[in-house]
Image (tube, rainbow, N blue to C red; front, side, top):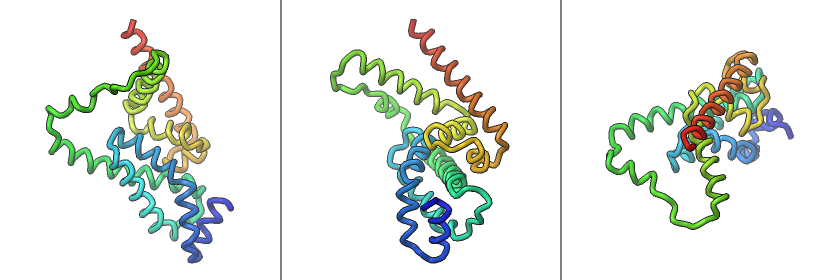
Length: 187
């Protein structure tokens, strides 16, 4: 059953189809939430739950002008960014500066040098992705993590396909520059 067929059944009153919608999109929404909330742990899961509450309330009004998938990720982006703004305001007012050093405590588990280097590279890439401006990071995540087409990303973000291509190109250039800077700094 397509996403749109599921939505039509949900709109017709078949609440059991919402479980399938949740199942199809839960991991993608959680990934997007984790990336946009960058290391906020439980808050990413809470934000993902907020997304599905919003989907449940809003899906009955979906008009099929875009794909259900792009509509859902557009809604997810808005909900998660609203949650992030709220969290940042809250954290900035309460975060004790002396506890920041606890976030960088090394892992005590021994491992092979190769696996450590791979993990270091992955972490550098994650940090580089987190450092991208929101507009570039969201486009990149929707393309690479969720597999949305350029058209779907454009509809989800409310931008032309050419802008999607430009944002993805700029994201890749910025990531490459960030990784190159790190390699230069390491040597």
